[in-house]
Length: 217
Image (cartoon, rainbow, N blue to C red; front, side, top):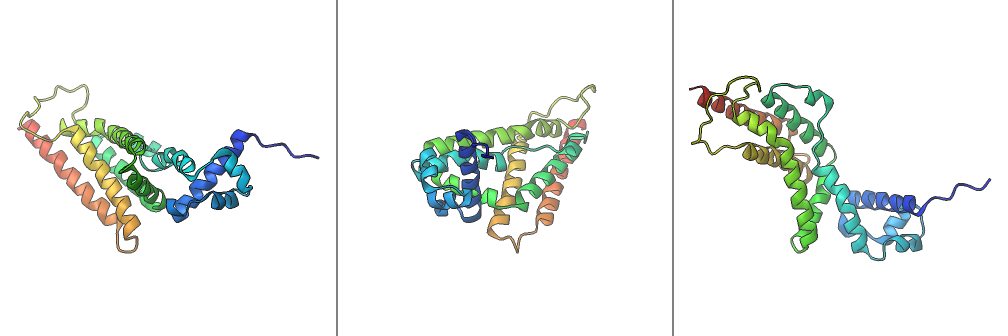
């Protein structure tokens, strides 16, 4: 019986998946059309049919790298946490664990950022991805800055003298997560994720307590 012929779209997806695997293991510098062909178990000509040059293949992988490193994942257990500061703690922990567990994804993001220094299209795509990633933390940041009052409660007036904003909290949260991933890439044996998270949680607790004190004073 003749096997079912794979569609060109499915073949292209297999090639991209193989390319991501090669790049994640060895970096973008080691990515070649022949290495991808071997990984995908197809001929070099088949890869050339879909991607004429290496730069086309590199460009096609960026969305996958962004999804792996700069798209917020909110586990169900985290979504059920009611208090904003506690939810932020849980979300930070989940994202730190996720990105540090397999640092190859973040290493690829660093490779792309190096390219993006001279490539406007890549730099812009990464910038937008990071902006959206920070946006996922902004509501929690706003809630913490505003004192974590329930939505039905009458809130005290906001302290205008404060320079801390929800956007600022979100930016710090992303910095902590990506800083954790970066150190996991550079110094996997010397870096302790647990210590990093404990320090981050303590900093956020102090911010939440200071804001509550300021708003109720």
